[in-house]
Image (cartoon, rainbow, N blue to C red; front, side, top):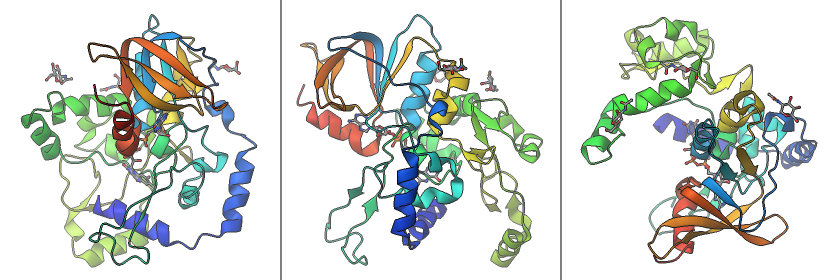
Length: 322
Ligand SMILES: Cc1cc2nc3c(=O)[nH]c(=O)nc-3n(C[C@H](O)[C@H](O)[C@H](O)COP(=O)(O)OP(=O)(O)OC[C@H]3O[C@@H](n4cnc5c(N)ncnc54)[C@H](O)[C@@H]3O)c2cc1C
Ligand SMILES: *[C@@H]1O[C@H](CO)[C@@H](O)[C@H](O)[C@H]1NC(C)=O
Ligand SMILES: *[C@@H]1O[C@H](CO)[C@@H](O)[C@H](O)[C@H]1NC(C)=O
Ligand SMILES: CC(=O)N[C@H]1CO[C@H](CO)[C@@H](O)[C@@H]1O
């Protein structure tokens, strides 16, 4: 994770030519890639669904995709943003997505303690606002984390979050296209046929020279997500066919969901409140549509909140005490 945050810092420092950025965002309105994404649903005030999923990011895209595999269930997926821009699939343009309308554009407060070396004593805190959420604007490193962390969460009471448990789902999702990894001694941790396609860059001599310079010549690992994680290795990316594999592309594209008639995707719709009944059970949501009209939608089974680490707690706070 230290690597990821340092890369994010570097990307934040890249002097971004504002003209290039506005041209890219303007071109995005051409919506050349819109066929990759689900069509806009039409809903009416008071409508019922079995499940309502709030936020179509990394989590919500998968949940809505999997729930709608059950043809008897009507699933509504609500997303504040729109389709990601065309250029978001180009990996090298990732840094240009921050500070656009596809970013919630949060800024941290000066708390007198953190970010004190920055001019304004705060940081820009990007969060994706589009189908795919932050996976549509992130840097695409495919990093599962360490077994010990998951097992500790399980020990602390997070039942079902242990390593064996989550690995089952990592494998269910993963379409790893790297032959070397799929033939390595960590192949048992991977799957090559799931919807989220993963690749590794070709070994280049420059990177190998860095590894050697670090002095860990004998600990160059094939697989960062393997059984052994101490050492250096080439990263794995959620990039395939030369394109970003956002959660929206992997789990909501027509190839994956085959135009399912029980999956409704409502874009440019801001959930403003979770509705609770007198038994403190979440029964629906209030949503502000792009027309500014506010409607209520109801879930007979569950409301699933997947609006991200900032907006999920915010939405609970906006929903008032229960
Ligand atoms: C610039 C950047 C680089 C990153 N790089 C990496 C990386 O290389 N590798 C890695 O593993 N992770 C990376 N991350 C982190 C990773 O992308 C996130 O942890 C992950 O996408 C979070 O998933 P999520 O489902 O919790 O939230 P999100 O994917 O952020 O999804 C939340 C969704 O909910 C929507 N939403 C929010 N509020 C509402 C509302 N009220 N009504 C309707 N919809 C709403 C949002 O628009 C969004 O689409 C990066 C993140 C950023 C921002
Ligand atoms: C691999 O992915 C396919 C397609 O999603 C799935 O059917 C299969 O169960 C997965 N295999 C494992 C071991 O998870
Ligand atoms: C989904 O629907 C669109 C528009 O009706 C159509 O063009 C496309 O071929 C369909 N895709 C699949 C996989 O059925
Ligand atoms: C696939 C798998 O390991 N599933 C288990 C996840 O955790 C729950 C609860 O601990 C078990 O009941 C599942 O069998």
